[in-house]
Image (cartoon, rainbow, N blue to C red; front, side):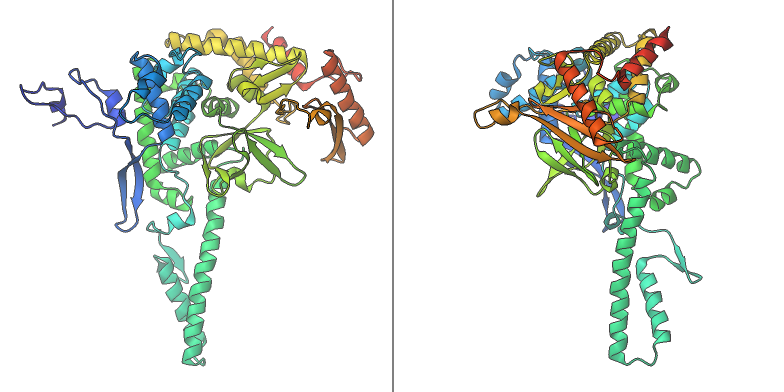
Length: 561
């Protein structure tokens, strides 16, 4: 029946083809004249009433639709995006269009003149959000495709990690209590009530009824709290590296192993996972790999594109590259931490995130895929990244006002470091961009010729101390009310672990952090020396302190020799 779509219609007959977004890009029908996007996509869901998994249509994200629409307009060479959409019957808001165009420029899909880049042309061939398409492409380029396939597929379907509220709607496995098989929580309640009746026959009827109601209430309340703890523990076992996305990869790999032993459903029940979502992820992985083959970025040999799938630092970097500019700063306090984004200020982590249970995140940044606003803004999923990952795999790096000053996101993110270190990052970034550009222009090109570059990058992102040494700040334009405050210099001391202290000098909107020292006096001297060195453009601090990044640079050069 499906072959009929390729037949030419008779005279006076119009052929209408209904297709999913993936099918639309997977096959070519020569006589198609118009394509109408209905604005819906099918997502896996679960019908608790009928105990049935469902694949139901739902409205797609407006932001995603606008970004993809902009790419399609440029791929069809229809001129200016804003002008073309302004002539539509129901033109979108101008601000929404401008935001979509700006986003596509930030991720490198459009150049400054709104022309499609090489990356943009590849993204038009992938029926998914541009950021997920970019992550998929970079996973193929850097030979860590398998985990990235899982992450992109997982972000395209319903969250496979269930809460206890979700799990109560799934048929549970039998539970043995007191030598009897209890197939549901209700049977356990009945069992407890019967036990209570036997032990309280002397009670009056009213007392008996009250006791049974009490057992029912207490049991259900305790089971709810206990299930919540179990669900949190189940997800936590998949993540010990401050990443929801890497937790998803481990959960999927465990499910695949369980499927081989035909215990996939039991694995999902034990670990509070949705079996339907895991199957949907498995199916989408195959679809996405097929689409990558159509772009010639991969061939049939998966082993070639998984040479570095074991390198979690590189996977973290590819995640950052895809999710940027979804970036959030981690501000460490004495007993906890706070989070801030450029658009929203202070934000919170969603309770389902593995990072929400952490008291401390030893990274200066989080990248995230989705944020939602209820009363506050919540990040649904996140992965922690270091300064090196953000500088090498984030957005464009711009020179600041002085030596050792780098900026990102139009100057909102600012990094201060030694001039030699800044030059190193800029040089590595230029070479990485060249590698990606050449690979996309020539998909069959092997990246082994960039062995020295990749070795240096992998060394740098794996040995970054993740202490946020290159502190960011947002420098507002000085005015009369703030002139005196901005021009002042502040010195802040903070006690850290092992009875040590770390001082920070604040000057003209910049923050210069010193090294940990055994007492406040030495910590203040170290911070002052760092600040003086930065402001005077020197290459050595007063106490001959060698920066960790300098050591990395020397080590990488030595290894290459």
